[in-house]
Length: 296
Image (cartoon, rainbow, N blue to C red; front, side):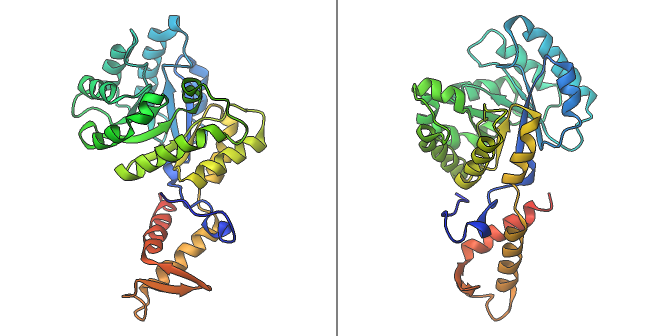
């Protein structure tokens, strides 16, 4: 799951979950041209143009047109641009998908994901259309995780996003600052993503003005094995980028693990002793992943 126990080795293993291109995925309302223009200048790894929650019903068509124009205009550099469409049981969804199909967007985020909704989205986008991301934000989706992940190759589904706000509502739970009621769900989403070779993104933090809470949520998501976090405000980007990036100690550890196993004297061993700790080949795979992520 790319997570490690909290304790004496925490400084070494912190940040191991991250791939750089997924540290920070910022939602921007597609109906707000100033927000879209600003997104082109921000240091987030991914821009998500939102047609759903951030857009009022009477602005859906305008937002769809604006999103297509923004994608066509470009200017986002090498960062992926994702389009969150409206849920497939709404009146706007298929027009959203039709627009996404030919827009050149890098992925389509499907809210309220179910196996049927994802199949319908893939059918609307076509087999050669953009990849799908799935918002896991209902109790039903939690129960459907196995089927969603198993269908991922045929759906061209690459990413699971924890929709913690809607999930809390559907569960009728009352999350505290530590998100205690949601942690089993977050662990299940990460487990499902790893089983299917998918990316896992943590849900948003609503406390825009609480830097300590944001930092704690980012660290918690990283500790749970998420690849990054979805965000709702540009002020949240720095905290996510820091939490989900390998720090200097992690990179040093990874470098030394790879070097140790490359040593002819230990190259064929299943486990070696390094700095007073036992390191196995599963750690070698993780070390290589960390070093590869640092060059993306």
